[in-house]
Length: 418
Image (cartoon, rainbow, N blue to C red; front, side, top):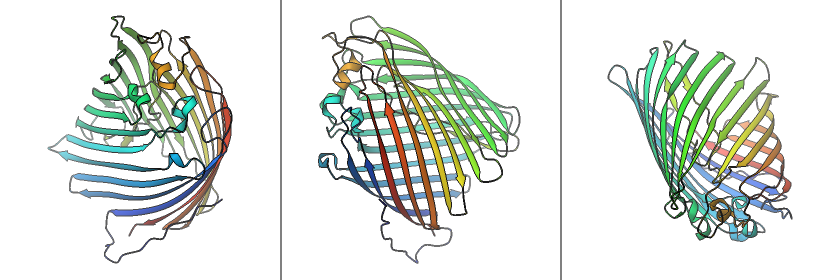
């Protein structure tokens, strides 16, 4: 199975320094267990996408924008055919002598993954709409110390009635002090408050998270870097019956990349998250006497309600030639349902309502493992081809069925980037 590149038309109107690029891609995926159920059912999905990217530095400002539209067609499960749209934009600026500000926003509309639907109704066409707006203000650019304030507001909506309990409005505000011990090592520390409201969830209308964040950004050598975010979290889940719950947990992420001289590159990431974590954007900031740029590693998004997810991902990439590379990857995720979950007036937990499960037990755990292999071929500067093979296996818990399967992906992309 192979992807077919879509045709693109070049234009002489673009100048050499045009900051705009256009990518057309075609991908085919065959999955032996597309719905992630115990009784496997296979299907082939064709996805055609068009993406435009803009990146321009002008004076002390940097402008970025990206827009993507895609059409997915299912060979067997035609009811899941859908259009996906994504739009993001950001502007960053240095001003005065020692200040830096950024503003970013994003919109994303796509089909909710079938495995996130109720076990008895995987084919439900549930559309997920996510909108986010954020800003950061930093004092201290290029010195030893910096103070970074951040604010973010986002909205999550689902189209189907069964998922309305997961609709959420979230606000987050944080303040962090960052110390650059050297050009290669910096530490951050500070509080972050997150409030998540569930407009349609009468049993659990609001969660409040008090986080104390500790960060490390360390470029060990020119070939190795490490990024750490560790949060001590205190969560208060408001209950309409007056029995509010308090949960304490450690969450965060760890990322390490190593690229020795030669053909190989290695990567390790570890993420522990709850349903309050979004993690869709990594934060960039410049600090240090050498003005190096650090990037905070972030990972898992949209974890199910009342669940703590711990994920480990390992990867190794070999550049066989100037145009051909191959990668191996391994992923392990453990899902843990917290004890003493909130109960609705019917005596069924909110988490059970979301997935159509009437079990009364309050704790459970399961794990998901995956093993993947991929090959990428940069045939030309404007043409890329890739194929990948993945095996996956899920153990059961109260919310998740046992399943296993494999998928094969092949695709090609054409990029107009003058």
